[in-house]
Image (cartoon, rainbow, N blue to C red; front, side, top):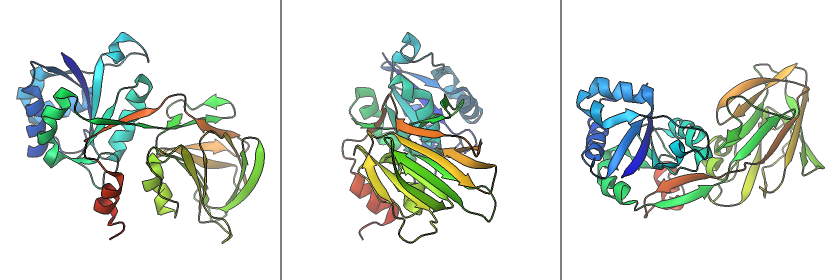
Amino acid sequence: MIDIAIFGNPSQRTDSPALLRFLRALAARHDRIRLYAEPAFRKSVISSAPDLGPMLHFLTLGHPGTTGALRFRLALSIGGDGTFLTTARAVGPHGIPIMGINSGHLGYLSAIEIEKAHDLVSDIVEGSYTVSPRTAIEVTVSGRRLPRASIALNEVAVLRQDTASMITVHCALSGCPYVDYSGDGLIVSTPTGSTAYNLSAGGPLLDPEAPVWAITPVAPHSLSMRPLVVSDRNELAINVSGRSSSYLLSVDGAAIHIPADSHITLKKAPYQIFVAMRHDYNFIDTLRQKLGWGI
């Protein structure tokens, strides 16, 4: 018997015919799989389709390495890329592969469209998919891990607050001071996140499994300040100066205010996030489909 965890966005419609068709197709394979849904998403689905209630068990995850977490072969993230990042925070430490089912907008991480998910049920049951390991960034602030979001699968951004004055981001790479970025801020992106905020700020596209980071300034004051690609074996130390007493630190979109005298350290996370994809998945094809890249 295979246990599968399901995460979704309860604020999105859970009565869509494509979603319910997919969930009912999975539930019909109860001889092979058991389904465990995140409570808020489960409640929303059952309100639309009460018949799924007996088939969707309550999802609970223990601490990393415990029996409760290890029993899951796969986690399904149903929503957009934001839902995928939330799922990654929940199951990433447990080493559970995540398959993204896109019911949102662009969906780089959630590359499988919900309208086609029904066709993948047999592959999910048989474990017929490719698993891609992705590196993440661990964030500490003045030597302390952040309480809610200390691991970034996409990017870490240091940004000025809602003022007209710019900030200067002082960076040291593995103990060696290398540049001061003056502007609106700085993005440090993983290869997985290179198609997100990094791309919007003019950063480079990276192969998803490349062992590198992209360091991209946001609205730099100098035209000579260009993105830089560095090995993810480095440790990046960041300090910020400016007129404000605090600035924003965003970890995969979760932003908090940080005192100006804080010291940020970024390094490769102690574990990888595993992304489950169809066997025919191709990164370049995804860029063409989502961005019209190279056309």
